[in-house]
Image (tube, rainbow, N blue to C red; front, top):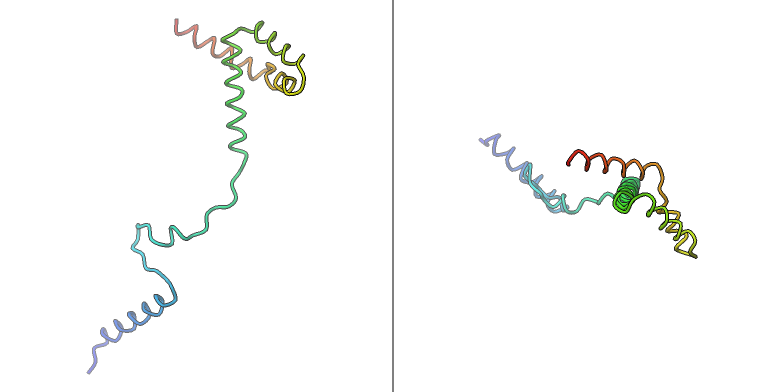
Length: 116
């Protein structure tokens, strides 16, 4: 007489040994096993997020500068950059005060006025 549970046990052990020989791993649920480190990394990432973040930082920095040195001085400095050559013209174009920069400068002024 053979025990049917023992036959089932040896069947499972044989299946596990066969899988182990093929290179399969056995991991407990909730652990970081080999498959965590060997799975392919995500190769496609969106560039939109970093570009929007850079644009936001640029507008905030320009707004802070516009508020701190004043609109007239800011416009004079941008005009001086535009009168330059090469990279200075590009800087003048980049640093010109667009509506977003003026909005940020106005909001900074409002916040600082409330704090007084």
